[in-house]
Image 1 (cartoon, rainbow over the protein chains, first blue to last red):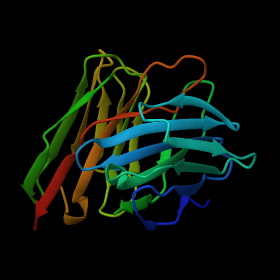
Image 2: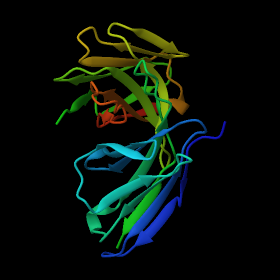
Image 3: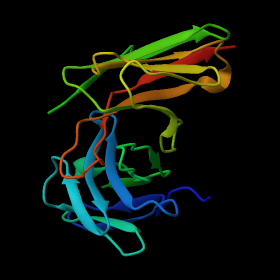
Image 4: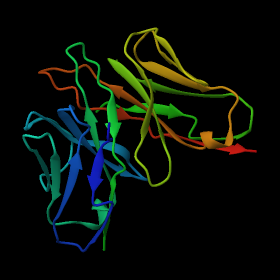
Length: 115
Length: 115
């Protein structure tokens, strides 16, 4: 089975621009979560999508948004980029069970640099 | 918000030595997960724990879900050079409304191994 894929792997943008990152989950996984990783703050939860619905959201400004498509692929968008948005953005997919098991498998991430 | 305290922050050990790291929280978790991250890559799931008191092994790795549901530890026996990396603990808080996609991460333990 193919793992979680993320595109692009690297991205350089300037302040004020917007960016869209893409994530394809493991086949059969319907839950996709996004995380931001920085040296100072570590891994922080952005949001989770399940069956095209956002079910949970972290403490990030409204400039961060996402969506999920019917094939479970997900995109996240950051508008009006700031220097502090430079980070590794990680996507994780999960095969959620009714018993609550939640093993999240991560993609390689997209390294975003804002100049 | 919930936070995980992971310790130690870094370890510098000799090849062949055993390693122990742990995570504690002020609130309970339903699930504990341990990940390893290599530079430029996403975290890779090592062990998942779902029941208080559960002890699980994966090769030279052993992890336990604390009986209070507020802590977990990871042991690595007979370390080898490829164990080098950053190890993260992650906890899933009790979920409501069906949302299981939010993991809280520790700050990581950076492991260095001297051959």
